[in-house]
Length: 485
Ligand code: ADP
Ligand code: GLC
Image (cartoon, rainbow, N blue to C red; front, side, top):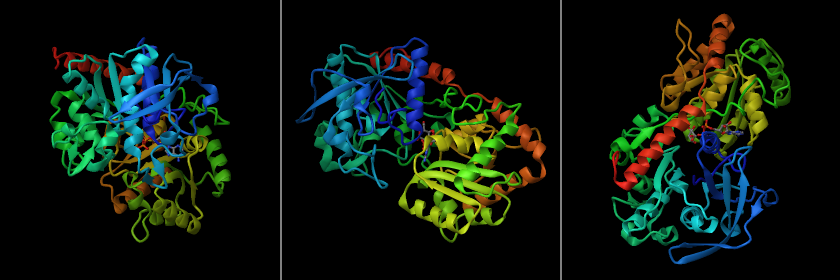
C-alpha cells in the first residue's frame, strides 16, 4: 500500500485509520502486506531500523538519494517502509501548514510514487498488487501502465478514493516534477481543465478503482457530487466499486478504552455520564446531567459543514445554543476562518466549548461523553466518527449522504440508530438537532433503546478486507488481460 497517512505514524483524518486497519486485517488473513510512506518530521527514527545502504530513486531527470527506514504495524507482521528525504518530508505538516498545501507537493509525492517501483529491488520483494490511497499515491497506476506498455510485466494496481474532493491538481508547467512525460499530457490522461490532475490519471490507469462506501460510489458518478470526475469514474464501469470502511474495535471500544475511567457495555451504558462529567469539568462546561451533550471531532473544513454551522449571521449553532436545551463540545483544527468563528461563539455561549487542536485522547473522551454526535457534512465518502459513535452509544446526527446512508438507521417508530438532516443547510441542521435534543428531554426511553441498538451494530474490517481481496483478484485478472478484464 502506498499512502501519505497511516496510524500511529501520521494522521490528518480517517485515511490514516483506514489504511492501517485494512493492512492489519489482510495480514491476519494470511496476506503479505507492506506499507510505503514518507518519514515526516514527527516520525521518530530511533524506534525504526535503518537500511545501511542509500536508496536511489529516479523521478524524470532528477535522482534522489534517500534512506529507507523500516518499522512494524502494531503486533502484526505488516512491514512499513519509510522514505527518508529531509528536504521534502521533514516538516510539521503532512500536506501543508495553516490550511494551504506546500508549494512543492507534486515533488514530495511523486518521489513516493516512483519509490514504490524502485524499492522492490532494494528490499528484495515484489508485490502482486500495488494499492494506492488517494491522490498522493495516484501516479502509481500511471507508471505501472507505462512500464507494461514497454513490455515490463509488473504488479496490478488498485486505487482507493477516500475523498474525490481532493484531486492533487498542479500547474501544467510542473509536469517535470512528476517524472511523467509530455506524452502523458493529454485530456484522456493527466490533463484536466488545464491542470495536471493526479487523481484523474490514477483513475484512468488503475486496474481497479474503489471508494469507501457503496452510496458514495453511486454519488460520485453524478455531476452533483463527482467534483468534475463523474464521467471518468462512470467510464470505469465494473472496475469501480464501493467498499464500506470498517472500525478497528481494538481501538474504538468503550468496554476497554484506556482513556475512560468508567468503561461500559450496552447494559451499563448509563456509565457514559461519568465521561460526561470528566469532559464538562475539563472543558469548562457547567457540570450537569440535565442537559444532553452534543460532540463533534472534525477537520474544520467546508466539507464538514462548518460554514452552515458557524458562519456569522446564518450559521445554525447560535439557535441550537440559545434553546438552552443542550451543551456542545467541539474538537477540531483546520481552516483558520472556522477556528475563529468557533472561538468567537464559545466566547459568547457558556454551553459551548471549543478546543482547537488534534488530540486523540480528547477524541475518545468526546465520543464516550456525548449523547449525540453531530456531522452535518456537505458530503461524506464514508465517515468513521459516526461508526465510532454508534459503538459508544452516542447517537449520530448526520446529513443524508454518502457513507452515512450506508451506516446509520434513521429514527422511526420501530427504533433506529441516529437522526438524518435532510439537506446540509442551517435551518435543517438546526431543526434536526433540536428534534433529537427534544427527544432526549421528553422520550428518554426511546433514546436508550436507540443507544443499545447502536452499540450492537458491528462494522468490522473482516468483511471489508474480504471485499478488497476480491478486488485485488479482479485487478490481477485485468492486468493480465484475462477474465474480469
Ligand atoms: P475525515 O477522514 O474526512 O476527516 P472521518 O470521519 O473518516 O473523516 O475520520 C476522521 C478521523 O480523524 C477520526 O478518527 C477522528 O477521530 C479523527 N480526528 C479528526 N479531527 C481530529 C482532532 N482534532 N483530534 C483528534 N482526532 C481527530
Ligand atoms: C476521507 C473521507 C472520510 C472517510 C475517510 C477514510 O478522509 O472524508 O469520509 O471515512 O477518508 O476512508
